[in-house]
Image (cartoon, rainbow, N blue to C red; front, top):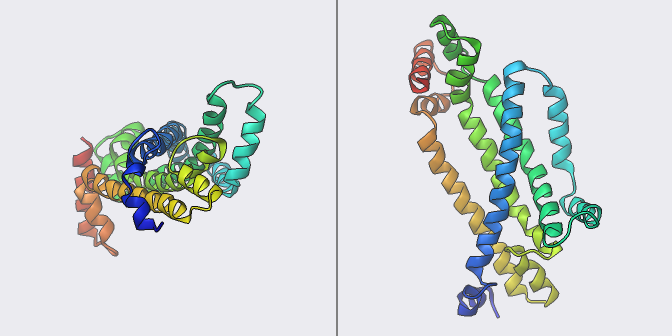
Length: 247
């Protein structure tokens, strides 16, 4: 059976183990992991960007998280949590923890870097208008940080989507099942099909974030980002645009 035959086989698109169901499981693991990672990383990133405290420590920790071996950590967490957690959660919890740890660094770095890299002209303009430091954070720096924040979330999403296949190693559903089961049965068409579906899913999410970036990010910020060397007039215009969007 070739890859095309496997993809066109109606049996692979129906039933509880069909492709739509496995995609749904894959997206569920991804969404839960990203939600938890955002709840942890965004407030922490805002605190670091706002106060400037702990940047070196957090940056080192984030780099360490990126270096963790995903599969080895998953097996270790499973062995540690197995005596404590019963039922299906003994497989779900370690998987979610691993994916959350994978997602946090990019979101965290994007958040505090975006705040610290906010347009100085926009910050100065807000300060001249009498904004308090907290108002500058929420009305100027956060809108300016949104492109980098979204970029961090997008990077984390692509990492989690591609890595969520490890859920199959502990018996969970998802697109990783096709890779694991195909390998066990020497069915290379099924393995290739699973890998292709993961790649297509990642591409679809990449396009979704591109659309979200156009919808959520201020047009003034998008224009100023495309300019390599903005003039003083352009910078002032971008600052006023940012302040207007923040109101």
